[in-house]
Length: 418
Image 1: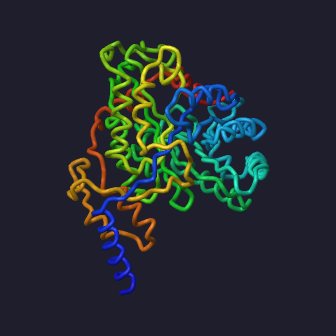
Image 2: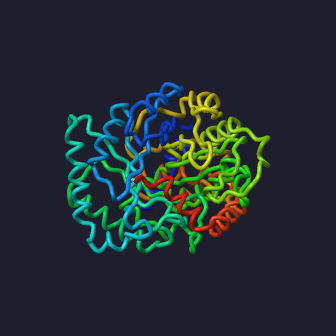
Image 3: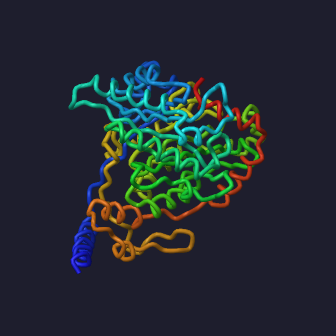
């Protein structure tokens, strides 16, 4: 009876809150910048070119690296008042095709892991107590792809994730937020990212990576933000409604890009009439209107497979980016755990998701007793985007399955540092 009364009161309070609307915490701006934080010049240049500074900066690190490297990279990022998003890749150059997840879980990497943890703690302790840096830790990302050796192994990922998290907890680590990050299209054998989820108790953020490849692959076309993200985003917020969402890698090709054969691209120039600036404007508009659970977004600001950057030579989209992030919805300041506040739902009718409607009423019926969790749940599932582009994602996934080993290796090597 007591629990029922608490839930009813909470539902009434939230319903009133929703009716009145509420200010939402700003979405944090982030990026991957050339040089992986080794040099502050690219960071400074981006912050100079952008209307607001970066709150989050993504860097890539493998199990062949430790805090001898990260100390420099993370310190450079923090010196610019940003938070490091460390993409921690269980891979080593001497065995590039080895899946290390089982070795991690069986304790074979304890010495490396414990050394990593101790060095992290020493680095954090080098700052004043009231300025201790937070680290976002993105372990074994894009696990539902087929280009990394840890892909396609849901049980292995879950076990290794919980093992790692437990070692951090036993060591008394604080100031680390765990980022569980899927690829937008499932290229694996399961087509269900929830099978990889290690548990609410060991995840702070859910996250997605996704790119507009244009027509450069034979199996892709110019795709809008909603076509790339609406389906996987809906999966995240309906399954994990109390977790903020981070777009850890997102970018659009230039319409002028030509297929890069080094990555197995055999497409065409059918997207020549498209506009990256329009794509950018649409992305940041949609995040404000239809994707309230996204609390941080990191643009992949480098020209690798294609011309992803905003402010490089020959790149477009920077003016559109600056116009959009000038809105107070976006911030260059980091907020721990991406605090979510409730926003007003659209008309109270719910949102269409794959033929089904999720309503505020049904959401309130399942609210947990924890008020913060309940508020986050209402936010996440009372305002969902219409799901579009599912067939495009299926086609993209099938296309990546047919790429040559050399093309997949090129994609992998474009992220894993030497």
